[in-house]
Every structure is written in structure tokens, then in C-alpha cells.
Image (cartoon, rainbow, N blue to C red):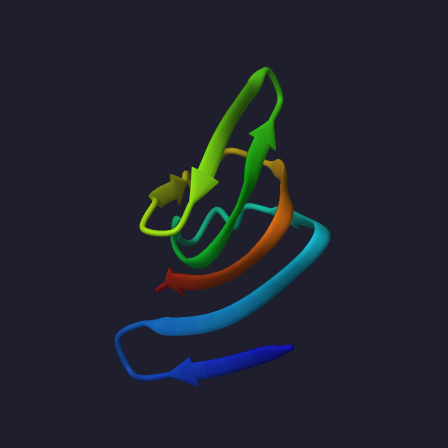
Length: 79
């Protein structure tokens, strides 16, 4: 499932992860994620971090490819 909200100032995507989601950063904006439910892991290059309900993490605009795994409900905020 997926939901989207757009305003003149920012965008919010609600994302359900059931297994694995691959993403790529955008040089025009960083991404801020908030874990609303569940647990899993975010990985990129030589970095990995366990994430669970209440965790907030940033994807820098220049990061490149990243992967989010687990069973999660995420809020993704970006400009």
C-alpha cells in the first residue's frame, strides 16, 4: 500500500514495506523517514542500521542507492 500528500512546501509518502524496498536518493532533496510501525533495517554501501517503531533517519541527497528491509510502515518526508 502507498499514500501520498503534496503541499507547496513538502511531500509526505506513507510506505508499507513487506520484505524489501530499494531506493535511490535525489540530489534535489534529502529524505527523512519515520518508522510508524514494525522493525527492519536500512542499508547502503558499507552502512547498515536496525530500525524500529519511533526511529527517525535521514537519507542524504547524495547517498545513491539504499535498501530498506523488514515489515514496516514508514512516513517519508521530502521537499
